[in-house]
Image 1: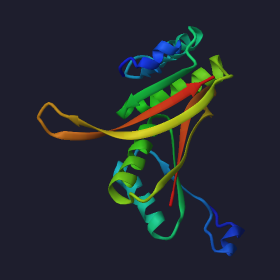
Image 2: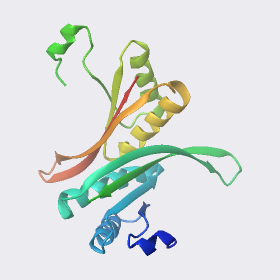
Image 3: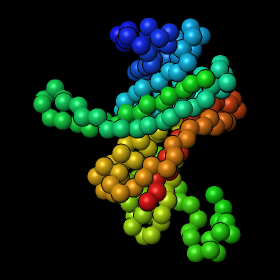
Image 4: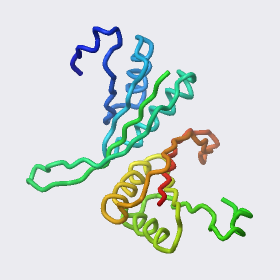
Length: 100
Length: 100
């Protein structure tokens, strides 16, 4: 994430936590840390099989750590990947936005 | 889900497709069949690792089969399961509601 000029306004740019194959609590910690450092909105993003983990992250953050958060949006989309052999695959993605 | 008395109004009760471990296209077909038989709203539900497949089902239904559908809601929740050894686990769930 690059720092954008909107940072001059005093609001940090929207923050995204990409969820992959690491243990769920790593991502929970990343989200909680963002909010505790003053972020007012954090988006959790995942693709393919990691989508389930992204939902776990959201549930754990909200139920166990920051119950005052609101779920601002959950969106899904399809993205196209090019495989090593040149063929294309579609993969689903999820974006979960939490905010105060 | 129990049948509710609103069925007397001529509208069928809300329909749910539970996504599990079967091939994705089985569930896609189930959702498309529900809409083609007159249902105006179908909810796709999954828990745990099947959440990713539920998102795939939604993306395939909307992008390939029924592009006129609207995404009415995506909700997530936590459910508690009792394991065989008596311990309890929390599992995340997703509910994706599509409608015309």
